[in-house]
Length: 302
Image 1 (cartoon, one colour):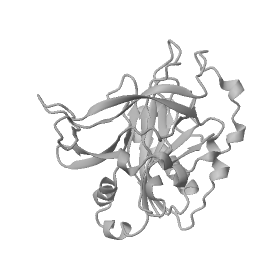
Image 2 (cartoon, rainbow, N blue to C red):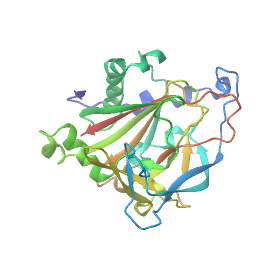
Image 3 (cartoon, rainbow, N blue to C red):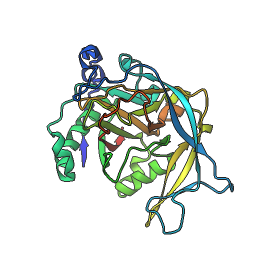
């Protein structure tokens, strides 16, 4: 689905009224369990190079008798700061992530069981959010989405990663808009994920993000993703003690977390990508429901 706007109308402050959020009235979830808030130390899985020195790769569809991936996990205890209450300090251009609150949807929770309903109702809402708030955005192409549930076949990813590399970002443009790719690749293009819970407030498997300004290019490792009909790339992330990590406590269904995976604007430079991962919060109370969420991936032109 594509949408074109002749005059972009950035309205970050209008869509992100953080001062209206009352944490005191929402410190328990619908089960009556306390919502963990504030800084927390948690174990995150970083990149560990293959022992044989081979280029790292991953089979999207596992092959019989072949390991799905050839690199390992380097678990590190990391302190994550809570974004709640300091959301206005972060922007897509400066940190490669941003937060929006009080965003209503016309699709209820049951509607997110239908791909058709998601594309018909939720996709236009995501497009409108991006066109309204992404400075310079002229055109949006939503190219896929993923639903994650504890009981589904797509569980939260507990490995630090970035969804795109510069190579795979340009290949995405060629894949989805082949007739226009040569022209579009001459201008600014970004890949942005719009992430939200479906059964918030989130308590199980919250999402951690790194401030992109604190992540060195040397920390990023291209991973070849091997599909049956093509190859793609994501980026794994090696641990660096200079990295600064955050999470957004108690995310509600009306919250939106924007993750920028790539930005062709060289003026943004190394701030154009955000490492992220699900993690286990050691403070999660016993009996808390598992996280359900949706992420919609968008090509943003302009």
